[in-house]
Image (cartoon, rainbow, N blue to C red; front, side, top):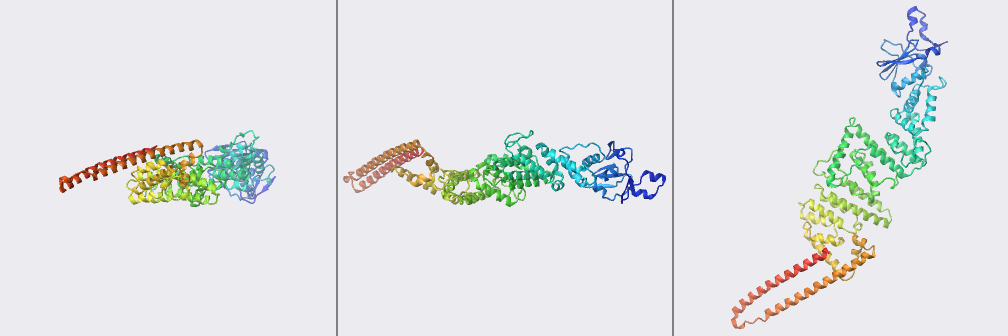
Length: 623
């Protein structure tokens, strides 16, 4: 039995020895199948040899390994090799065929050779994907032989692999270096569908799956980002809860993004957190010549693209963490803007430490800004934009929700201002713009704003007087509590005009309290009294304190009346002093001397009474 091939082949040993017809070189004699079956493969240095009774007549190079084999076993099963015009070997060190870009490389080709020679082949989850791709590359279909490698690998993949969770995870990991073959053969799609179907089931019946919430997070988090996004997209399409998807995305981000959990707790904690985060970023940027930096950016962009739109899916803290990472790894401005909008939609759930975003250069990620103008520790502009997005969102909500949201955000913003106020490089303009970003009715109490302003004045002792007045105009003295007014009245850092306004507002409040009336600003603008009026017990306590204030004020009025009567008596005595018998000049001199002495005494008495009143007033304020 013979088969003719149009291609030229290497000369057989017989034609060289006995000088047979040259036409013999254009055909090959197919020996008996039992004879062509190889015993085993032997490796010598970088070459593989088939141990059999018939000498090999074909050399195939895959990567840097040369396989010395027979033509017929490969031609009979591999359509790709059968269609090639094989050229004879030029030298003993040459080869007839070179297979470039073979999926799986030399290791997979060795398994294919064993299959072609009839040797036992072990299919498993690690080699099934590259074997399926390589068999497609070599065109090993049933057209050439029944039970060829393509149908065998396809059956093993469908019936064995996809029915097991662990085996499917292993197969999809082996597909990371097999593009685009795994995409064209839909191996990745089928594996992702299988994983998504198993993960979306509430009650698992498979033996290799644990019936716990989030049992699939760790396995899925070990996959490459493109495979992970495909799985999450498929899971979302199957109706999985947004909260579950959000938890899985958070788990993946913490595993693949270094520095996600670094928190910058104010000015004192900023240095440690900054150094740790910058060290993680520097490692990523130096990894594989900058490849690590691009990889982290790709992960961030992919994770943001698959985040569920529901607000309850992912907490605000995670959005701020991923926003920090996006700025560190130079993500696109559109992505950063999208994250800022998402944070603005749920700003009332944020915390101060989460808003402390490091100020990094855009052109050199991972390096802190060194210029004098922008050398602030925290990125205030990002927070300013987040607040603007929050206000835009609040305008679309109902009036009640709007009030509650603005009250909570006003507290958050005041605490944030108190944190950044300690930055010596923070300009007064940025501080003022951020403080005035909320509308006037957003703050029911200005105690937090006063604390932030006082912290800024304390950290910027060299601030000019006009800048101090400009900063204090942000604060409404009528919305300060009694304790804040007491502190502000004794605060030497405040401008004199502000101190006068504080004292005047406190006097108005005390006078109104004495009249037994409660003004609207006091009721609506005091955060402290809103909380106290919630219970009747605290209301009774306030009434008791008010009665005490009235009693003390009455005592002050009686003291004042007594002092006024004493002063009138002294003035009357000065008018009736006798002395007409001493002469005009003597009367005049003695009169001036006595009046001066008595006026000095009166001044001393008035100063003492004034000091007593101020001391009583200070004690009253403290009480």
